Length: 406
Image 1 (cartoon, one colour):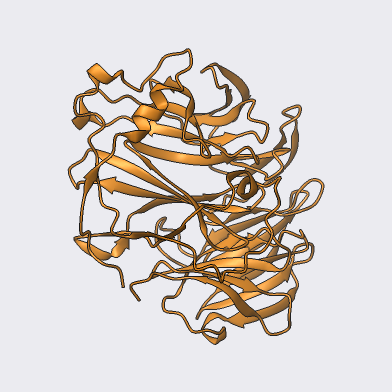
Image 2 (image 1 turned 90 degrees about the vertical axis):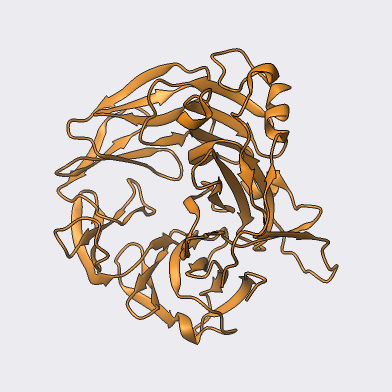
């Protein structure tokens, strides 16, 4: 079980770091004599414990060319579990999650600050190979759409202005995670709905009303495509394809020339995933209920070159692809997870989470990609993270990150 917040302190360090790394442009980090109350976010770190490594750890090799490899292994063991709302211990304060394009890092964005603000953001970067926290960063502002840029060790993010600070502004920025330096910051009059940096860092795709645009580090915007009825945007892991989801269909575009590759008369409710293939196949989930927002099982379709095929009708959670490109993992009712062929959708193997040893508390909440073929991660309802080896006939847990309060 989680514990209530125990202590609080003020954070100033990231504004100081950013001040020394300023670049030209319309800044929203304030000079020291104008900061006032803007950076005074009270941050509780009672859900974090830093200690020396025991020396008995057997770390598996991380590719130096991966996002995790660029960040490198920390000098101390950073133990973290998600904080909870003091008024509702069943509600985690995780605002969003994402992964690096190479799947080497899972990123959790946690809300900090008092109930009435101002709010801050804690970024937790976890290595999917060894299940250790590589980096913890405290930001004295609300960050959203935090996305890893390729294997650069940098993240792009949107910053939401907070009226209660009086001087805070909305905008976007690029943060060097390894050094803690803000490399780019620009004000935006309105925040886009989505932000996906290209793996090269040359620009990011954003979504504004019915337009898909490229947003450049200097703040310039350039129209990529106008899509009537645009409601959602997804980018393939290799950044070669873009899925524009409208009110009536899903359109797949090539990012090289903005040409329409194919379209399908399906609009995902909760589930959407790029699979391997040229052009890529899609997994699209349709809710059993016509009422949006209700937690109902989904019907899962495999889309190949615009042709959808029903896979099964009881998807009850997230879906992730195997790094090999040959399979995907899907959550089913009663804590069952299935492995299926990514070309045909045919069943390959499965396991009940409750049968995987060692026993751990919590039910599966989210599946995450792993960086190694045959593996995936499970984030559960009590904030634990488990790594599953699905290569043998009998699946097994090979890594566990648990709250130390259990």
